[in-house]
Structures are given as structure tokens and as C-alpha cells.
Image (cartoon, rainbow, N blue to C red; front, side, top):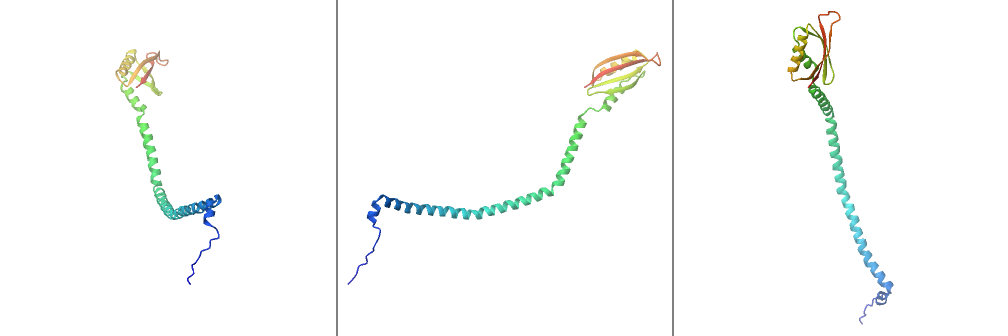
Length: 179
């Protein structure tokens, strides 16, 4: 006799799936299986990407150390270069300024023979000249010579007096603006 194997299922399929609880359990079992598989895939992806991120981090640290060493090696040159640039800028600024010695040379070149200068004082854009002359004609010639130079403007004769020590000499004061 041939016996047929019968499978015994303690949970009847048809009645179990027919109930709400049965359908909910069946849905949960199949859905959670997919959720677990997807979660495992995400975890495996994160685990495997960690090796790539560690390698990238290591490479970046190595590059950072190399560049730090290069910067430290060139820091002395950078300091000397910046110091030299600052000195050149100071020289450039000073060379742009008008030098009083150039202005004095121009004024002295305009002095006629009978006029002698006692003092020259400078402000930012003006100068004041004090001098002594044998006659008013010498003073007039000096003012005329200064007017002829384009470097000077607004030339005005301030005081004109006789010298206390020698009445034949005339003391004068000239103010002028420097361009």
C-alpha cells in the first residue's frame, strides 16, 4: 500500500487569511521582509563607503601635511619679500613728495646779485622767504624772477622795512604758493 503523505498545518490558511488580523500579519511579514532587506543594503553600502571615505581622508591629511611643510619652508622668503615690498612702497611714497631742496635750489637760482636771503621756511604747499636787498629794484627783480617760474604761484610781498642795523638796506618778506 502506498501511503500518501499529508501535511498538517496548524494554522489554516484560508480561515487565517480571511480574517483582518491574518491579512495584517501576512502584510507585515512580507513588508517587513523587504524593509529588512533594504535596511541591510543601506548598512552594507555605508560600511563599504567607509573604506573609500577613510582613503580620501588619509589622502587629504597627507596633502595637508605636504602643503604645510611647503608653507613653513617658504615663510622666511615670504617675510623678507613682504618687508622689501613695504620698503619699496615707502620709497615710492617719499619719491612722489616734493623735496624742499629742489624748491630751495629754484628759489636761490632766481635771486639777483644785490639781494641776500636770510631764511626760507616751508609749509605743505607754501613758502616764506625773508631777505635783505640794497634797493627796491632788487626786490622787484627777485619777485619778477619768481613770477617767471611756473613752479610758483600767488607770489606776494609781505613786509617791507628798513634794516635796523643798516638803514641803507631794505628787509623784505615774500610769501608764495608752490605748485
